[in-house]
Image (cartoon, rainbow, N blue to C red; front, side, top):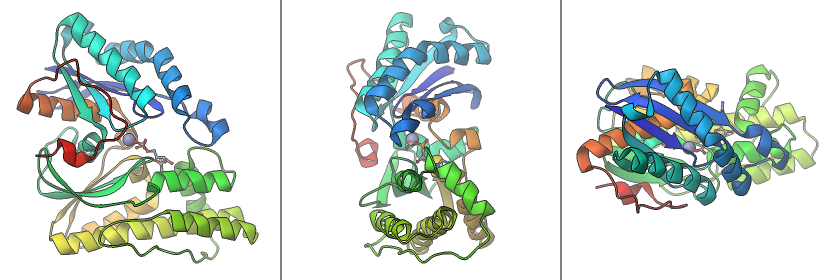
Length: 329
Ligand code: KG4
Ligand code: ZN
């Protein structure tokens, strides 16, 4: 059963063709808009929506071409409907509904965080229970996944997402956008001493990144070299992420971890996860192409949801905010 997965929740126009039965991604095309948002140091929703609208049919055709299929072969259209930038979400959703209506095939709305959460398992089946650490530009949360569709958010950021903190720190240091990959590279090359940055104490498995950001601003004002600040920021941010994750593992006694989202591409985070693996845990990470926003994860989840619940009405709307628990049983 061939499924088309569409994601336009933020600044990537992404469409994939996924063979549900064979559990295989046949194509995954991503058209990134970074260069258009770079001058602003962050994503501008209206610019994102306009670029999605300009690109989406080309990305769709390319996804079909690479997969070697025609429109008539598609059996399900899965689209991210929430959460995300509303004008951006609407472009993908409207396009997807249009294809479903035109070809008279089912349509399924997908929750973006559920798609990230299960992205490490694309090509295989998730093993439950697992703890999911979703770390992206818009989200930072720890989820206890008990079974497919049954999720409990046990920790989240109280302010900025970790990816957002990366992007803001990079902006303050004039390193460009997006900040994650640049800061990660600087960290790898840095050989000096690390500066002290706070790891905010917040309750339970929650996070807070705004204090780290303020501390970075102070270090900039004091005149420390940008490389030293950037490397120290990465060290602190990743240690903080992993520290809380370890605490959650201990308290929940869950032995499997699935880390996903744009920041799961981070080299230091991957190193630390390897150490956790050596302590007897099973760590699942997405393939690099599935770390940032992509249509494949949407198709993967949309297909499984469709098998369980059937299709959605074309009346289903886009929502800028929607907690993962709202799609949880
Ligand atoms: O998942 P994603 O593509 O978008 C959202 O759904 O938000 O994540 C994008 C975020 C950006 O903030 C970017 O700076 C960050 O992921 N990122 C990284 C790395 N690569 C991307 N952060 C840290 N290290 C990286 N290597
Ligand atoms: Zn995302």
